[in-house]
Length: 239
Image (tube, rainbow, N blue to C red):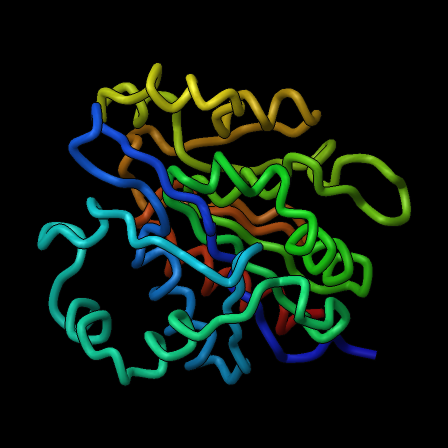
């Protein structure tokens, strides 16, 4: 039986000062908006959820350089379907894990803080994978894999697989590598190595780049959110 054509976009519920207190990190908006648009256009019923049902918008993701045109109009329209689903999302524990055929973890640096302990989101991702569905992530979204086990093997879901996510070089370019490491959670490259995965990346930290390894699809950075979502749909459609 094919997995349900229903997708969950996982959202970080964490927030933290960043850039020495000048900004606040939370959800990087286009990392949820672009997959939402792709998945909706592909005929998926799309839900969003965070571990607590709350979210904070990453202030840098609201900068005009990051949120433009139709994206900004959608964000600023609190009656848009995207905003209504995001603003009224449920805590992940209130969802039925077996309902989903595709799981997509959005990012924002704050995902490093709460995703490794987001047990209700882990359960949805694990059930999606176990039932033959697609699990995807983008940028710092791979933090969801820290603590996420394959229900059959009891091993890390990404063990032995190829993936991508935000680069250490990107953290250094933003001038925040040591700041985010002080949160006590591994950065994406370190996490992949720790869990027995092979980390891959594009030549540049901001290049649109994604990796497909079977039913696992990952994108490197905000610019990769839509292409990773399109790849996830292509994989789903071949199941």
